[in-house]
Image (cartoon, rainbow, N blue to C red; front, side, top):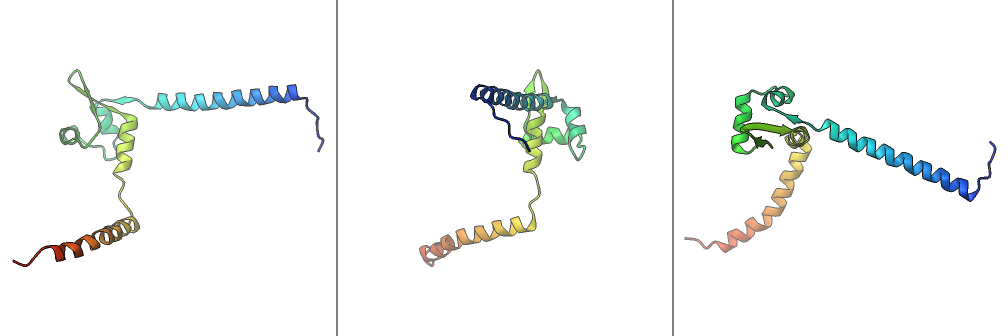
Length: 123
């Protein structure tokens, strides 16, 4: 392996070029994300949803506020990124996660339950 001596000026130019490449790469990814985020109408959402839901089901979700949506000109619109986040939130917990939550709940409420027993006088 041969070692090349580089002047300070050349080193600065190389660093500037590398920084420009990093900025271009980050910008390209940001633009790609913006391009992938798009609007769905009701039928597109029904097709996109993993369960291929019916429009009536989606209307029910909208009415109860379960699904993120936007209304404009009497039409429902759904932003893909919001739908993706909403779908991820509905992930079923593992048995370990459920057991940990139950343990935490019981530990936090055990103290309160004991205090409540002493606080309520017999009738």
